[in-house]
Image: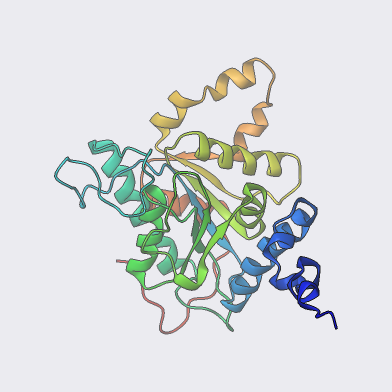
Length: 279
């Protein structure tokens, strides 16, 4: 009698959930997209994350405190192609991002949940540079923070300061951007390159077109951003309206950036009796 080994070994007989070839096929792209949404959403809800303060900025910014023999930043999460900038401005940006994230974490609600709900949790792209600095500032405060990592050819690794249970990896940039935008109560863009520009203008475009509520947006280091983007030219040429310049503001100091968010209406939950005060 013929045995059924061929049937048992056939790809068609595998349970779909355990069939990697099927799950990774072109026809299942929509399902993979849904899974990237659902996994992060489930864990964010489990941690009670209602709103975030998103911090963008370059992976190529160095902390100034981990240097190898060649003078390069030796962070294990640094992409190989992302040569760090060992300059006083670079180090200043790192430390201001760290200080800003600590202020937000201590005063914004991430440290002290109300009825299990956390507001203004720091969220970054999860990698090195400014992202590491912001996650590190939250870590300094003892607060959770989020790392929305993306799988890249140059093998980005998560930095050591994002909360492990809130350290995600995405294949699709679009779904990563969606998670950035969904809970964003504010955005602070530190100096950066293509990735930072992409994410900053994505949020501004969503707000300008009414696809998301207008939230406070701050470009940190006014000298950098005003040199990098000629916003006045965009108005002069009619590409944007003068009123649209009100979608964002500038700041040059971590404390001032926090004050600007509060002045712009950032929602801050009631202070709990055991809340730590920022020093």
